[in-house]
Length: 352
Image 1 (cartoon, rainbow, N blue to C red):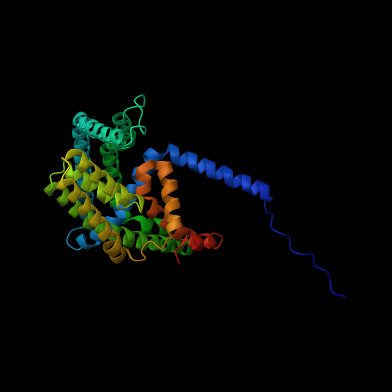
Image 2 (image 1 turned 120 degrees about the vertical axis):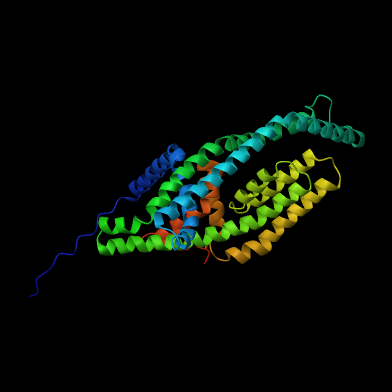
C-alpha cells in the first residue's frame, strides 16, 4: 500500500479586486511622486541622456589624456554649451517680448483688412457687435505663447542644474561597474551589468542618430531664416533641433512657429512665402530621407506606443517630458523584456 502524499500547497495570490486596488494605489503614488519630484528628476534624466551621448567621445579622448581630465573636459564643454544656448534663447525671448507691441499692430492691421474683405463679400457673416477679429487673434496668440515663454524663462536655470548633474555623472560613470560588483553577488552583478549594457547600446545608438538628424535639419533651417532676414534665427534653429526629438508633433511645431513668425515680421510678399516653402522642404527631406537613413529601426517601438509615451510624459513634465519620452520608453521596454513576468508586455510595446 503506497503512502498518500498531500498535494503541494498552492501559492498565495491576492484576490483580483485587491490586486487591482493595489495597482491603482501604486500607480497613483508613483504619479504623485514623479509630479512632486519633477524639479529634481527631470534635469537628472536629461543629464543622464546627455551622458550617454558623451560617453563614446570620452572613450576616444581617454586615449590621449587621463580619464578624470577627459571627463572634466567633456562635462565642462557640454555644460558651457548648454548654458550659453539657454542664455541666448532667453535673450531672444526677452527681445521678442519687447517687440511684441509692434507685432500686435501688424496683427490688428491684417485682421482689419480680413474683416473688411469678409464684410464686403458676405456682410451677414460678421456682425458689428461681435468681438473684433484682431482681439480674438491676439488672445489666441497670447494663450499659445504663454506656456512657451514660461518654459523659456526657466530654461536657463534648469540648464545650469543639468550641467551640474552632468559633471558628476561623467566623473562617476567609470566607477559604476566596480560598485555594482562590490554590492551584489557575481551572478546578480553580471545580470545588472548585462541590462545596463543593453540600455547603453540602445540609448547611445538612438541618441547619436537623433542628434545627427536634428543637426542636419536645424542648421539649414537657421541659415534659411538668417539669409531671408527673419529675426531670432538662432532661437528658431534651437527650437527646431529640440522639437525634432519629439516624434510627429515636434515637426509640426518646428515648421508652424518660425513660418508663422516670418509672415508676422516680414511684409507680405515673396520672402515669407519663400521661408515657408523652404522650411517645409527641409521638414519633408528630413522625414523622408534623413530620419530613415540615420535612425532605421533604432527605436524599435510601435507608433501607437510612441504617441502614448508622448502623451504620458508630456502631461507629467510638459515639453521636457516629451523630449525624453522615447528614450525613457526604450529603457522601460528593455528592462521589462529581461524579466519573465513583464516580457509579454515588452513584446506588445515593440514594433516587431
